[in-house]
Length: 185
Image (cartoon, rainbow, N blue to C red; front, side, top):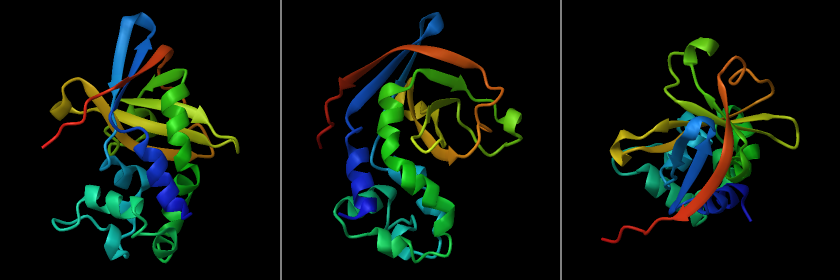
C-alpha cells in the first residue's frame, strides 16, 4: 500500500477522540484531531508545485485528506515536487504521531523566543524520541473555536533537541482517551 495513504489511515485513528492529559499541578490538556490537520502536520503546504495538494476554495484541506485516504493522491505524485525533501522527515516519521499522542510522558510549555522564532504560535510540545534517534516534536495550541481544546499545530522531526532545549517541562501523570460523538448533519 502507498505510504502516504497508510499515514492518512493511521492518522484517522485519532479522530473522534478526546485525549485528556492530566499534568503535575492538577493541570489538564484536552487534545483533538480532525482530517484537516493532516495537511499542515505533513507539511503538504510546502509542495507548491503539486496542484493536487494546494489548498484553495475548491480544494480544501479536508478534501485533500480524503483524496489521500482513498488513494487518489499518492506518494509517487508528491515525490515529483521540487520541495519534497523539505517534508521527507515528516513523512518518514508521521506514523509515530499516534505513539506520541498515546504515550508521551512529558509536555513542554513552548516559548518561541527560546528558539528565536516568531512564526511558531504553539503553546506546548508533546515529545518522543524515535527508534532512529530523531526528536519528534508535536506542537499543539489552544483552538479558541473549540473551547478549551488543543489541536495539533505542527509536526517537526529533528536530529537535535533544539525545540525542547530550555523549555519548561511538566510530567504527564495520565492520559485518558474518550470517544466523542460524531456530529451528524
